[in-house]
Length: 391
Image (cartoon, rainbow, N blue to C red):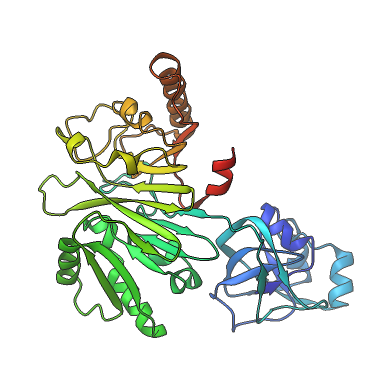
């Protein structure tokens, strides 16, 4: 990790500090994932190569690095040359974490040991949202839909997108216990070649669960996936990994019926999360869908590809047209993914419309509705399932 004297580390986390200044041009840690450490660990950042600046440049850049003259003299005496590092977030912790560290002046910490709470929270990190087909000019660009469900005991990824190395850091990928695949359209499997090369470099293998036909499709599309241990399933029988029970859900999505599509509900004790990123309401869906698995979860991240007026396209959800069906699933927090050009330009306004629809549904159709929040997922948005359950 990289250590900064407080309050400078906290200021980065708060968004106030935009530039890191050091007295040495470090090259060995450029581009690496580094814990941002101060009194706590605030997340993971990546440094860019340093720019050499003189004292005049130091003073010009004060609004960005926030180091006072008193601090400069205390730390570096009469030094005239400094090195300015731009950085970017890889992962920003919602709540800073405690860690073990030695007191004193430090630049880099070789072994950051996070102190975890005795309470084992379960988190869902939504990794992307962009529509399956988002023709230019893309109105709401982003990473392709994918999802990480994790706690200190397990880590499960759903779908391997082409954006996987921007969505997850090295540690998150190496810590995966299993990967589940929803279907074999390119937005859900586009990252397999890159993932295999990465795992080969580190001498690791990862277990991938997918419907048996989808395993065959992946193997045919990506040759020599030497680091992938496929576990094909033939039915919707639950799969158990550590303390998580994963229930595959058969869905209707692919118009040509070439790519079988599944969602997944994960049960962790008395908490559950449903992830169904691609499906629609084709005639006869009620005879196919497992409504027990699709309903009554703490969190559901569901297909929301179309905003309105697209019910003739049964391969995706048309959110406002199908709102009554979605609200009837009674998922406490219901969020939509896979959205794009059919949506309003102002997503804040779109979420207000969704809330209006929810309140109207509760008032006029079902006063007992258990849905408390509807919204649109953001890239790398993190949900704490324990807190959702408690609210």
